[in-house]
Image (cartoon, rainbow, N blue to C red; front, side):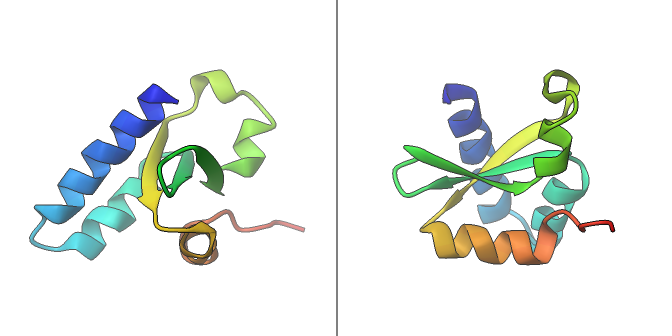
Length: 87
Protein backbone atom coordinates (compact mmCIF):
# COMPACT_ATOMS: atom_id res chain seq x y z
CA UNK A 1 0.00 0.00 0.00
CA UNK A 2 3.05 2.29 0.14
CA UNK A 3 2.67 3.23 -3.56
CA UNK A 4 -0.99 4.09 -3.01
CA UNK A 5 -0.12 6.20 0.02
CA UNK A 6 2.51 8.09 -2.01
CA UNK A 7 -0.01 8.63 -4.81
CA UNK A 8 -2.58 9.93 -2.30
CA UNK A 9 0.00 12.31 -0.81
CA UNK A 10 0.91 13.59 -4.28
CA UNK A 11 -2.77 14.08 -5.17
CA UNK A 12 -3.45 15.84 -1.86
CA UNK A 13 -0.57 18.24 -2.56
CA UNK A 14 -1.75 18.89 -6.13
CA UNK A 15 -5.25 19.68 -4.90
CA UNK A 16 -4.02 21.87 -2.04
CA UNK A 17 -1.84 23.99 -4.32
CA UNK A 18 -4.22 24.18 -7.26
CA UNK A 19 -5.86 27.36 -8.41
CA UNK A 20 -8.95 25.28 -9.26
CA UNK A 21 -9.06 22.27 -6.92
CA UNK A 22 -12.23 20.90 -8.47
CA UNK A 23 -10.62 20.69 -11.89
CA UNK A 24 -7.64 18.84 -10.41
CA UNK A 25 -9.97 16.29 -8.79
CA UNK A 26 -11.85 15.82 -12.08
CA UNK A 27 -8.52 15.39 -13.90
CA UNK A 28 -7.38 12.74 -11.41
CA UNK A 29 -10.51 10.70 -12.06
CA UNK A 30 -10.43 11.28 -15.82
CA UNK A 31 -6.84 10.13 -16.24
CA UNK A 32 -6.90 6.95 -14.14
CA UNK A 33 -8.83 3.73 -14.62
CA UNK A 34 -8.64 2.86 -10.91
CA UNK A 35 -8.87 5.31 -7.99
CA UNK A 36 -8.71 4.05 -4.42
CA UNK A 37 -9.89 5.96 -1.39
CA UNK A 38 -7.54 5.54 1.55
CA UNK A 39 -9.65 5.76 4.68
CA UNK A 40 -8.51 7.47 7.87
CA UNK A 41 -4.89 6.57 8.58
CA UNK A 42 -4.74 4.78 5.19
CA UNK A 43 -5.04 1.34 6.78
CA UNK A 44 -8.21 0.63 4.77
CA UNK A 45 -8.80 1.15 1.07
CA UNK A 46 -12.00 1.45 -0.91
CA UNK A 47 -12.41 1.31 -4.69
CA UNK A 48 -13.91 4.64 -5.75
CA UNK A 49 -13.48 4.05 -9.47
CA UNK A 50 -12.45 1.02 -11.50
CA UNK A 51 -14.00 -1.98 -9.81
CA UNK A 52 -14.92 -3.35 -13.25
CA UNK A 53 -11.37 -2.79 -14.51
CA UNK A 54 -9.81 -4.68 -11.61
CA UNK A 55 -11.79 -7.73 -12.70
CA UNK A 56 -10.07 -7.66 -16.08
CA UNK A 57 -6.36 -6.87 -16.18
CA UNK A 58 -5.31 -4.98 -13.06
CA UNK A 59 -1.60 -5.09 -13.91
CA UNK A 60 -1.75 -2.60 -16.79
CA UNK A 61 -4.20 -0.09 -15.31
CA UNK A 62 -3.38 3.51 -14.43
CA UNK A 63 -4.00 3.52 -10.69
CA UNK A 64 -3.94 6.25 -8.06
CA UNK A 65 -5.40 7.03 -4.65
CA UNK A 66 -6.92 9.83 -2.62
CA UNK A 67 -7.17 10.27 1.13
CA UNK A 68 -10.73 10.18 2.49
CA UNK A 69 -11.76 11.14 6.01
CA UNK A 70 -14.13 8.20 6.26
CA UNK A 71 -16.02 5.62 4.22
CA UNK A 72 -18.87 8.07 3.66
CA UNK A 73 -16.55 10.51 1.87
CA UNK A 74 -15.21 7.67 -0.29
CA UNK A 75 -18.75 6.59 -1.17
CA UNK A 76 -19.70 10.17 -2.03
CA UNK A 77 -16.73 10.39 -4.41
CA UNK A 78 -17.78 7.07 -5.95
CA UNK A 79 -21.30 8.43 -6.45
CA UNK A 80 -19.90 11.39 -8.39
CA UNK A 81 -16.83 9.94 -10.14
CA UNK A 82 -17.23 6.18 -9.95
CA UNK A 83 -18.01 3.70 -12.67
CA UNK A 84 -21.18 3.92 -14.63
CA UNK A 85 -22.84 0.53 -14.46
CA UNK A 86 -23.73 -0.62 -17.95
CA UNK A 87 -26.68 -2.95 -18.41
